[in-house]
Length: 596
Image 1 (cartoon, helix red, strand yellow):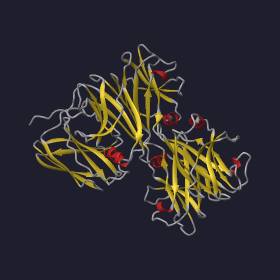
Image 2 (tube, helix red, strand yellow; image 1 turned 135 degrees about the vertical axis):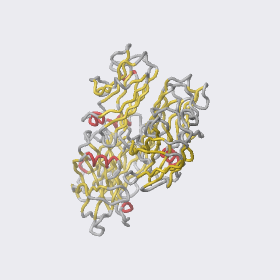
Image 3 (tube, helix red, strand yellow; image 1 turned 135 degrees about the horizontal axis):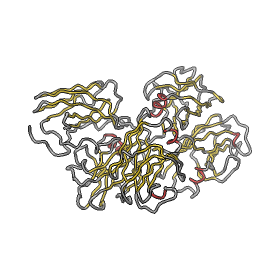
């Protein structure tokens, strides 16, 4: 047998650079805890920090946890998820006593039945205990990785004094955490005249107030645009969180406002859909349009929705099962409250919730002219696209062997306009000198794609992005790299993905397997992995999706010479997959495969 190569030699296949934004879609339920001493009750004086991610499985039955902690006063004596809102203390909810290794937490746990309700209600926190701080040295609330949404339901009754009108509207205001831009959309129906102005005002539901932000009138039925959050009054977010802002639409007949609606925080999971004929299958030529906003209860058992349409008279309407570009069966009919206006509460099964989170539910409004549907829209959740991954010395090329560790979370909105990142490192040979996101496959080095803030020990930031950056992230061919004086090319690194690599077996990778290819790639229903081997061995072929979930494992037997291993993709969704061929003694070859 030839000598094995050293730690990390991966044979990676190139994948198409023209994959759509849907490939690698990973808008999963992911929570993050950013741990500090100031969040303890009472606060401690520690300078320690921590970051932990909690990736929920698609069926919401299990959770993968990874956390790294730095600058603690001593060894970790306890690590738990506790119940309690921010500023309060509570009992132990999940115990990670057997999942701590030094300053690192790795765990895979079955979720308690009420976990989602507790977590979505912001009633859980991660607490790290030490001998010097037995009640907890640092802690952080579990925060859902989502954009912020406020719903708006407008009518004349909410005007002060109330206005008699047949007009109404539905809309929302949303922004990414840390972003300097918010976007808004309001669809109107039955307005008594052309809008003369529209604004966001300060004021409670029973009071009138001054104009805060003007809104852009696109047409008689659509108000839409963006708000520069750097120009709003200093108390804008305070009033927004207190539900002390309202949207007002003015007309000549009602100069003080014909319809208005408070901006209300709903959720915690919010969905939006802008209806038009282009989304029908096949597309419909129509000037009609509509808007649907919805939010899920914290226990994920129900959805409340508002929907408004204009430009036609709906004959009926429904929520349907089905991804974009496909037609599907009815989930529930829409309940008419007013002409062209729908609102109701819908009970949800766990499978339906999963489909909602995956944007596989659409709203459809039918007419006599177009009985199969005149306008429709996919319901898009406010969940951010999340890449939660580990950082270590082994992923460097070549490995630095320093023992440094870290964890990171990178997110962006579904419109691909804004990116957030948070990461931590520990155990480096010296202070970090630089940090970047680089272009490069697993096992390969590449140039700088994005500069990021140097960790100390935490690094964080946000900035606008474009589709090219998102395509690079979705491809799996980017990595976060932290440089030090001792290792100027990078001391620790982590591939930007939703899943771990540092805890993969670190045994040496074989040199007796050569010429690995996958064809076709991309593939639709099946692909074949081919390679030459100088030795016979037994092992397994596995596929892991971008969420870190192992979706395929099959036993293999390799003979000397060429081996061809078929992979059945018929039951796998479209996306990017990481494959591995593992021998029973731990040797590994890695590849990538795209299902189209």
